[in-house]
Every structure is written in structure tokens, then in C-alpha cells.
Amino acid sequence: MEEVAIDNKLKLARVENDLTQSELAEQVGVTRQTIGLIEAGKYNPTLKLCLMLARATDKRLDELFWIKGER
Amino acid sequence: MFQEMFAGDERSHSINGMIAQVFLGLTQIFLAVIVFYRLYVVGQQDSEINDLRLLLAFSIFGYIAARLFFGGILPELSWKPALIAYASLAGLITVVCLLIYGWPAPEDWAITWLPALLGPAILVGLYALVAYLGKRRVEREIGE
Image (cartoon, rainbow over all chains, first blue to last red):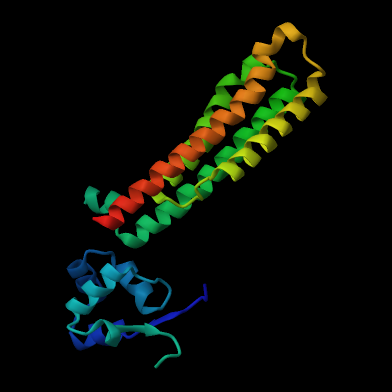
């Protein structure tokens, strides 16, 4: 299977919502480090967490995450 | 606080799984090295290392069985591959034992030929059974 990288704009969406990493982490039930790693593109979250992050930042899933190079 | 420390999130679950797998593999390798060292370097008797061998077998076969059953990951065995696997295993064990211990006395069949021929059959049979049960479990989950 082809290796694909995931890109995201979680940091921008979080700042737009005036949330800190810790606040967002608490809302979706993960650690601050996990949010930091997702923002840095160093951890691929599960679909469940992606959906929770989209809900917490009031974005659609495809606005928040996409396959690198397809946008 | 303790729940946070030990429950973690999906990333820590994934890291925990990876670390556990690596250290399980290392532990099994070290156990195997210790078994061979005590058998062939120290020269201990078979009966003196039975505890370690039992632990190693439990760890390896328990791991394979759990992966088969809960993941449905390893392939199911049909008759032909099962027979090939049995013949290869029994042949390998027989040849290695004959090379090490020589041709066994006829009256010792219960501790020589029987385990060499029955052991692989039990292994292959258990593999096929657990693979079938694991696949059936996953198929049932998909059907729900």
C-alpha cells in the first residue's frame, strides 16, 4: 500500500477558536502532547479523534485533515 | 490522576502496544538464548531447563494464538498447506533428533517417535483451529 502523509491545519483552527493545546486536549480526552504532535504532523490520529477534533474546532473533517499534496 | 497516568490516550495505547511487542520479542529471544546456552554450553540435562522451555513455548504459542484469535491476522490453513506444514515440521524434528541422538531403540517409541510425529500434528491442528475460530469471530463482528 502506498505510504501517504496527512496534512492538517489543527493549529490554525485551534487558535481561531481561542483554545490552548491543553484546553483542546481536555475537550477531546487526549494529552496535550498528542495535540502538539498532531499539529506538528508527527502523529496520525484515529478517525474517531479526527472527528472529535473537528467537532471541538467547529470545522468539517476535510477542512481540518487532508492527504499531503492534494490541496 | 492515576486513571490519567495509566489509561492514557490513543497515542499512548499505540506506543504501549509497540513497546510491549518489542520487549516480548526480546524476552523470547533472550529466553531461547538462555535455553541453548544451558543445554549446549553449560551441559545441563533436559529436565533442568523444562521450566524455561515451558515458559518460552507458552509465550510464543500464546502470542500466536492471541493474534490469530483476536486479530484474524494470520492466514487460515487449508488441507494442502496444513499437510505440507506438518510434513516439514515432523521431518525437521525427526532429522535433527536423529542427527543429535541417533536412531532410537524400538522400546523408546513413546518418548521418541510419538512426540516427534504427534507434536507437529497438535501444533498444526491447534493453529488451524484457532485461525478458524479467529476468522469466524471477525466475520461475526462484520456481520453485526
